[in-house]
Amino acid sequence: MARIKWRGGEIAGHLDILVTDNEDEFEGEIEKWQEVLIHGDPQGLRSFAKLLMKIANLNQEDQTNLPIGAREHYHLRPNLELGKSSVQAIVGRIDAKGTGLFYDRYVAKDVAKT
Image (cartoon, rainbow, N blue to C red; front, side):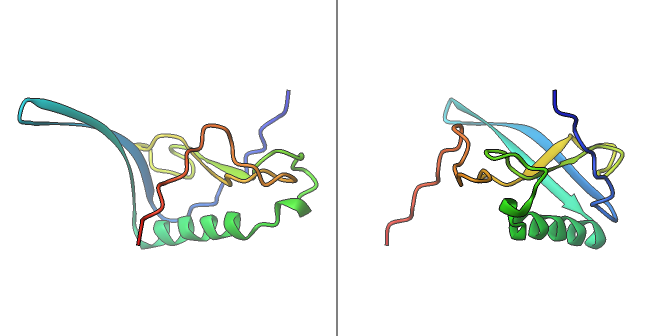
């Protein structure tokens, strides 16, 4: 079993990530959806942006500790990197090292027709 290596300290300032369940009724039809809310103070948002850029710019092929088929990712935990009111979040790459494949669950967005 692989051990998770916690990095910690990626987020400075204040950052809150939460999931909300929403419901609305229109003409007798009930629509339900979820939203992910990401809020922070300027320092928290800047450090989150810095982490996203670090992951985006990382050359996964050079990472000797990352097996072929794995994806670089960071765990953001409540009361550590995130506020106590947050849910745990994982931010990572969708493309796998060595193959570039996306995970099976991913469904691409529709391309806008011009």
